[in-house]
Length: 98
Image (cartoon, rainbow, N blue to C red; front, side):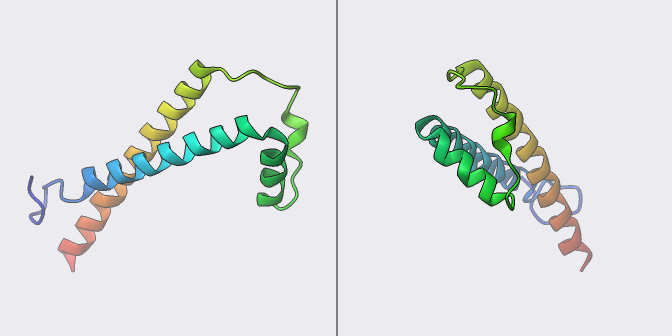
């Protein structure tokens, strides 16, 4: 892998992998916390977003669905990889221009 010449991938792929991994772990931990303590997790979300009431979006106790969790995890990880790779590519371009 080329890391310094223009046109090489440089930090793009490693940055994408790092962000995707971080987002995946964070999403899994968040889902686990919500599954373990839904009321406390909802209170935290309400506080995190300056008092917005997310409980109105909750229609009742929903059983954990692994397919929904997996799909959302996949989308979040792919999204994070793409944005991380673009970020790494931009950083490389800016460093080579300086």
